[in-house]
Image 1 (cartoon, rainbow, N blue to C red):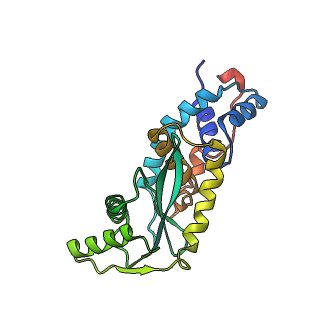
Image 2: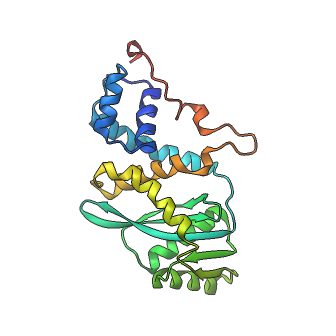
Length: 222
């Protein structure tokens, strides 16, 4: 059975936007008259979400120069992995790489990736993690960039609160089967919540291309 792209995008967006399992999606689509197996929805998400994330990443708007960065835990194949996340002072997402380890190399890779996307920040606020401290100090030593480093749990409350939105979506998934699946699905969840989905400088909202329209095609079109 072949499905229209809009049906696939609707399933994928529901999964990335709301705390639903694929069996929930299967039931909801069935009530709309569109029979979609939960395993099919999973395959669509793994294939489509990274493509959408890459497209939105290219059109992502600028962020502020004051960054707040911390990592949170995500269970993958029964083991804890680390989702590095950063937002600016206004709460706009900067970047969100998933790493297998929480160490100096992972922290530095995150900072370099974020700087490559958004430029050098004026300040980076972190917790008292030795790995992140060492990563920032080594970057400053290598590049000479005048980045001010601050260690403040209070200032990082904004990113800690932002974690909750991601965890709310991830919780019904009951963990990820593989690192590849986790990276693909988290990229979709983060992208859905990113400020890049708002219109900037006259651009159309991401929903205008049908990703978030919520319209279901009649079954005779499937």
